[in-house]
Length: 166
Length: 84
Image (cartoon, rainbow over all chains, first blue to last red):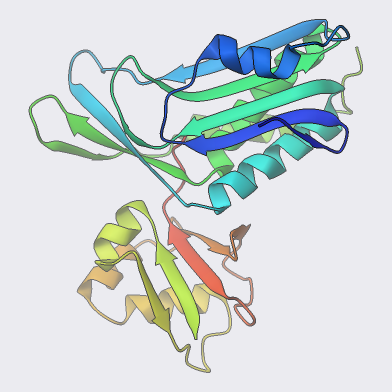
């Protein structure tokens, strides 16, 4: 369901099932004639050169949805968006499968590009999800460690100037 | 009584996903709670071996170690997040 929170359509979902990119974009843009730009980011599971058999995504039910909603609300305040979608999967995800989707729609491309980038940077460091590796040899590769460059990527938005209105 | 919930390697080291506890009067903040939990057993000591690494949430909102725990219904401890 697309919920109109405030005044722009929003779709936020934490789900085990895969998603279809065209369906998710259509959900936000169908019947609209005011949108000039749609940016999508899809995160997929890599096999790490054949070493990985799957990623197990653990999440904090309730807080995951709440935190994604808070991050989306921040993006809506900073950029003139016309629709936003964020989907994050949990459970066992195999190489080649999708993990995360961000969709941003705006009148012009800059806001859509920047908001999509902001959403990914922020959700990586704030949304309560954790990845555990399952290796091709049948053993567990342990929990994926948080990366310092992800924190830096999120921090650059704090230092950024006033919202872009172009 | 307050509900404590654990995720990822914090959950594995604690040996449980959640528990109900009665907090001692000496536990005022998240940092106090982490220290108190670490003193309970070996698994907990391992989970909080580097307390500055473990993140916390009160009632599903991120909080700092200095945040008071009074009035909390659910307190979560977990490693830095690795979603996306």
